[in-house]
Length: 125
Image (cartoon, rainbow, N blue to C red; front, side):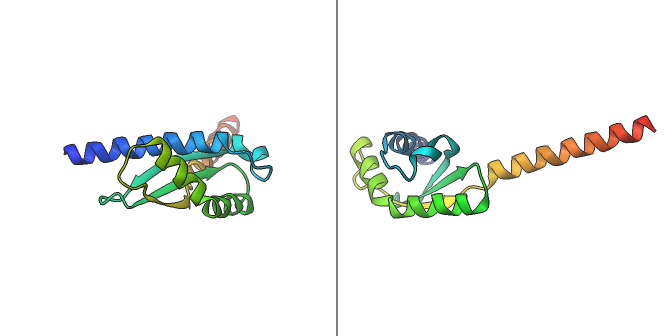
């Protein structure tokens, strides 16, 4: 139980540090999109060698793929930033993945709204 708690705390800290790294990053390719990018969650393996970083991006499919690929290219920068800001024996290898959770939430909201609209239309008849 204690080990699991420590792992969750580490995941939370890595998420926070990666968000800071993103905001401090000075790259003209990513600057206009920083406000659309969220590091939604981090999952660290039990041996702390790997960290799956889930990134959500508001936009179309191509933009999301581009951002995840960009993060994969810059994973050295992010890993170095984590190593400098969190005391660990070794910084975990970061694996960036697209998080579709926010997109699914928005889609569910749209579906519920359309159901409400259709019910209002049926009530008026």
